[in-house]
Image 1 (cartoon, rainbow, N blue to C red):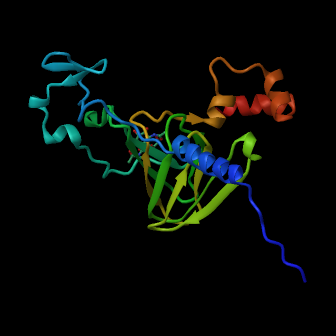
Image 2: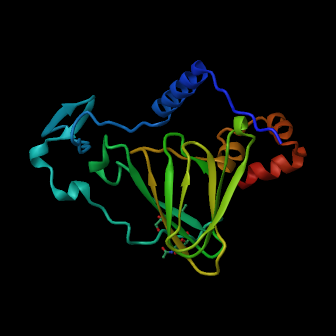
Image 3: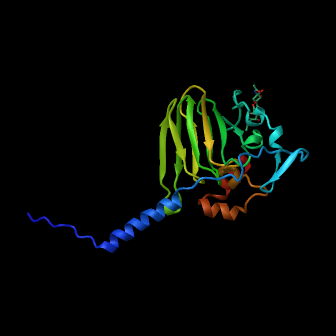
Length: 225
Ligand SMILES: *[C@@H]1O[C@H](CO)[C@@H](O)[C@H](O)[C@H]1NC(C)=O
Ligand SMILES: *[C@@H]1O[C@H](CO)[C@@H](O)[C@H](O)[C@H]1NC(C)=O
């Protein structure tokens, strides 16, 4: 049998190295606050003005500005059987400008955190109690691929920024998870509410064609949200 030696031209190697360098530059970034912290404040007395925001005078800042508690489960007696307790700059003023936030998610047995996206944040989720079926769908350019996993206590999963994702409690007990989000204001777009529950409603001709549904079914769905 003949073995052939692979010959790679020098310019091709240089191109590969340059490409790898360019990729590492474009795929790695981190928010960079312009100051150590800027505790958000509503009343502009006793403030300094930094980066276009009112910030509490650093001399008046206390430990409590960086503290809040999410020890109380959210009420899951609703249609989907889940409840998100957000910790953003609104609940924790010390988060302002720091590019990070948190959510506690409670699930009743079989409860669902329905498909949604965070336009400004990647989410990293850890299960504290129970068993969750979680997943996200990639963009059109990536063939709408679905990635799912069943998570138990202590398991961690990451949902890339802006992709549609969900979490379903597949256990017979309550479940609790915490999520870290890479924005102080991640934003939430819940797909079903957005599409079928808009105010005013989206023209039914748009929805029948887009989702290939009967008009009666569109009507029914619009009444649910
Ligand atoms: C989530 O729980 C809180 C606290 O119990 C409650 O005030 C809120 O209405 C609940 N939200 C939903 C969507 O059920
Ligand atoms: C949870 O919400 C339901 C429905 O709104 C309400 O009837 C119930 O009293 C609430 N439970 C608690 C503990 O607040």
